[in-house]
Image 1 (tube, rainbow, N blue to C red):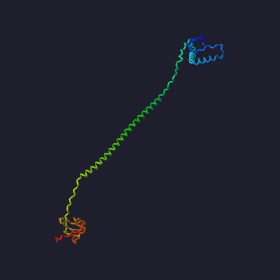
Image 2 (tube, one colour):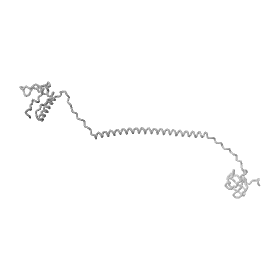
Image 3 (cartoon, rainbow, N blue to C red):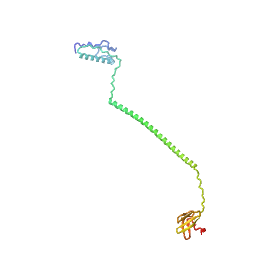
Image 4 (cartoon, rainbow, N blue to C red):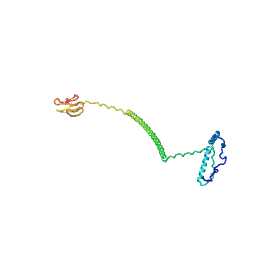
Length: 241
C-alpha cells in the first residue's frame, strides 16, 4: 500500500449520514460487557440503518480497489446515498423467447384448425342444400301422384261420358224367311240334281248343305229321295209326273 495513503481521504463530513439515532461513545471505564441499554441501542441502530451502512462499506471498498489499480492516490468523491425511503428496484428477468420452429408449428396448427372450421361450415351448407333438394323431390313426387290420380279420374269420367254419348245400335230388322221347297230333277248313286221353288238349282252329294234342309245325309236313287239332317226329304214333284 502507498505511504501517502491516508485514512483521512475517506472520511465524510460530520453529520452527513446522521440519522438521529447516534449512539454516544462508550465509556472506557465501563465494564467489558457494556451496558445492556447500549447493546440494544447498537442493535436498533444496525437494524434501522443496515442498508445505509452496507452501502457505505461497499462504496469504501470500491474506492479502495480503484485507487490501488489506478497507480496513485486519488481522492474519491463521496457517493451520494439515495433517500432511505426510496423503493428498491428489482430487475425482472426477460421472458424466454419462443423458438421460431415452435411458433411456426403453432401457426400451422391454428391454420389447420381454421381450415377445419371452414370445412365444417361448407359441409353444413351442403347438407342444408341436400335437404332442400330432398324436400323438393318429395314435393314433386307428391304432386306427380296427385296428377296421376287426377288423370285416372278424368279418364274414367271420359269413358263414362263417351259411353253415355255412344249412339244406341238399332236392332237389325228381321227378314222373314220364305219357305223354299226343293224337288228332284235327276238322281244317280251318290249325286242328285235339285231345284227350289225360288228357282235355285244345284247339284248335291252326301255332305253338302241345302238351305232349310240341312246337310245331305243320304241319297237313295231307288226311292228317288234325298234326306237332309233336318229330317226333310226331297223327292220328285208330283206335278211333273
